Length: 183
Image (cartoon, rainbow, N blue to C red; front, side, top):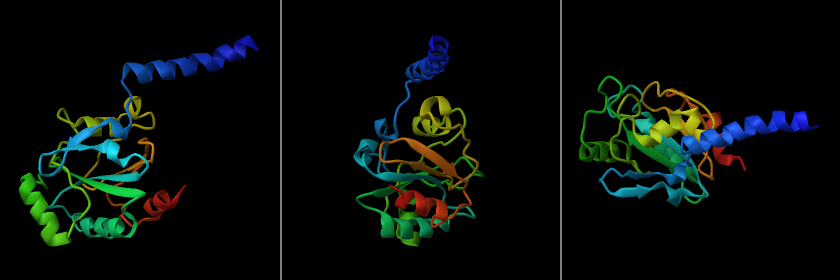
């Protein structure tokens, strides 16, 4: 009995210790900058599911803005939110300023979900939120790499990472709709 207890306790202790060493946070612990440069506290989304997407204005996947906006209009509000993070990490497909990005999103796709300031989603200058999203030691779920524009991360109501979806996965995919509708 004691041996079984020790076999179970030691791995649990290691998990808890590594979480403390790496300062594991929830999504809600981050403050980012919105597209106008103002602080945007992600704790305001406690109790809501969130879809986090890195975006770009000059990408073959840019038309996904339309699908994201439709998803937001249908499900966004009390229980679900979409947040866009413009990034210029892939083939310089987001070269604009925050002001230019905001104008592009509004004029071409009528984007009404929150857009944040342009950040880096990979590399040495990766934004701390994306470091958390892509590092299992920090998020407690999985390691991932942002492979291209419009990669999607699913965050539950408690601010925990659920998983991620490939950039080519459309906003109205069964996985995203199931995530939104799940209890």
